[in-house]
Each structure stands twice: as C-alpha cells, then as structure tokens.
Image 1 (cartoon, rainbow, N blue to C red):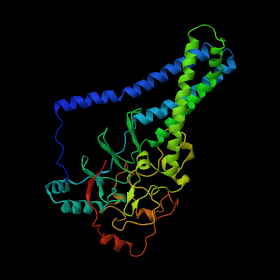
Image 2 (tube, rainbow, N blue to C red):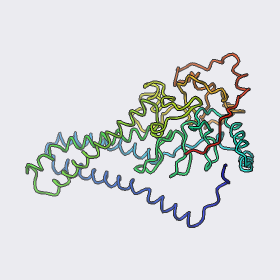
Image 3 (cartoon, one colour):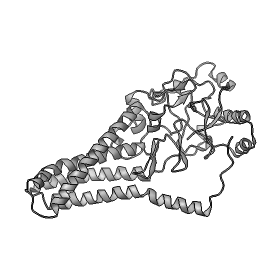
Length: 373
C-alpha cells in the first residue's frame, strides 16, 4: 500500500532538522581543524624552525603545498558537489500519483507501476522481483539509485553517505571522493616520511628543547595513523571501481529479472575505470567531473535481456532537449549496448523485429510493489 503525500513539516520537526544539519558538520569541522594544525606544524614548526638545510627546506615546502592543494581541492569538491537526483522522467505524473493513492488493491497498484516502468530504461528489481519504487520521493528508481535517509532524497548511483564530507557519495562526486582518498593518503604519507628523521631526533634528544619538537612528534603520530586507515579505505574503493560496484552493491548484489548478480554492471577493469574517471587521461588526476553516462542508466554484461523494457522512454526524443541538458537513455537494451563504454565510436544496430518485441511489452505476473531504500 502506497502512503499518502507527505504532510507539511511541523515547527518542532523543522527545528529538529535544523539542529541535525548543524551537527552533521561536526566531522567536517574536525577534519578542517586537524588539517589546519598540520599545516602550521609542518610549514612553520618543521620546515621553517627545524629544517636547517635550505635546499631540503625548499623541496619539502614545494612538494607539501602541491599535495596540500590537491587534497584540499578534492575534499572541497566532494563536500560541495550536489548529489544528482533522478530525472523527471522517473517521477510519477500527478495523475498517476492520485491514481496510485486511490487504489487499495495491490494488484491494481502493481499494474500502474508496471505501466510506468516499462517506458523507462530500468533493468534492476528488488530481491522479490518488484519494481524499485520510492514511496517517499514518489518515483520509480533508476538502476543503482537508492534513497538516502540522511539527505531524504534518492541519489543516483549512491555509494554511501559519508559523515566526513557531510554529503552523499554517488554518481556526481564519486570520482572526487576517490581523489580525496588518494591525495589525503599521499599527503599523510609525505608528511610522515619527511617528518620521520626529526621524529627520531626527538627521541634521541637531537632537537632543541622548544615547542617545535612536540608538534613534530604529534604530527608524525597523526600522519601515520591516518595513513593506515586511509590506505585500507582507498584500497577497498579501488577494488570497488575495478569491479564496478558501489559500497551498497558490495553488501547486497543488484537484482535483475533472472536474479541477483554481483557482477551485473562489470564490463572489465578498463571500462569500469573509465566509467568513473572518463576517457580523457588528462582529467584523471584532477577533481573535475569526467565520469561517463548520465547516472540514470548503465551498460550491463547480462546474458538475459529484459523483454519488458523498451529501448527508450515513451515519447522521449533527445533532439527536443535543451542545449544545457545532456542526459540520454540507451537506445537499445543494455546487453546489446554499443555505447562508448562497450565499443567506442559505434552506433546502435537495430535487430530485426525489435520494435515489435518492445510494443508487446510482456508483463511479469510475479512482480509486486515493494518500497526499497
């Protein structure tokens, strides 16, 4: 049973959410303070006050500021890049919302959602074979889209909600998140490596008895501990990129009509990597968006096609979209896709009789409405 439209928030509820939004920034503020202190400890206390060799001092400062700049840029992009939400084609029209809310019978509700979903490039289902429908956002979920309980929105290719960036990590900023992990790891490794000899001098009484030696000691401990945690996290996400999985999909494999398939979206390491970082190598190390696709549809490696789904949404014409919009749906079932993710530069080849198959749009009698986050 689909719930009614959400009521307007009460005054007390609005205050509570405002307080929560403030609290969500605490981890980001904590990281900012740590980074600001590390900058002071490294630049002032280590390089300026403790390093005596001028050449060594210049090399340390130049390399440090390069890592610091790239880390800060990637962190900023991860925090302030707005997560992308499903396109309007996936939202229920007002008439369908009203119809869905008036229906009490589950079978009638099933028919409404099946009719809407068959006009969309959707191939994943719930574990029970139902259309993935979000009751809170009142939309049919695109593949790999999930509802974030913190943001209270459906996020395209949602990976997870990260408290350290106070943002959802998904299609729009996953590349930035990967670079944030990479540059923060390199930053910590560089600080720990260059601080090591002075950390040893601290224990052998080779440093002057000033406040600098305490900054040097804590700087090494902090950089070393963060390096250990970041290396494991970055390694895990490198594995996810190579397998073309999100964190959510690693814990629960996406389900298709033929069942769950943890490798359903994997196209091989090279294509998986380019799906996140793009085709142009010059943009790979930069926190500039270069990911492939629109976040709403993805090529798959599935053997079994979904005969219910048409090639494009009904009435959808890419030529009618405005110049600022670049979203496109695949022109054929994803298994037959010859997009640049699969075979660069080739166009779709229409199989004989495909249009007739799409028009028939056979139904799945086992499909039920199931709200899934």
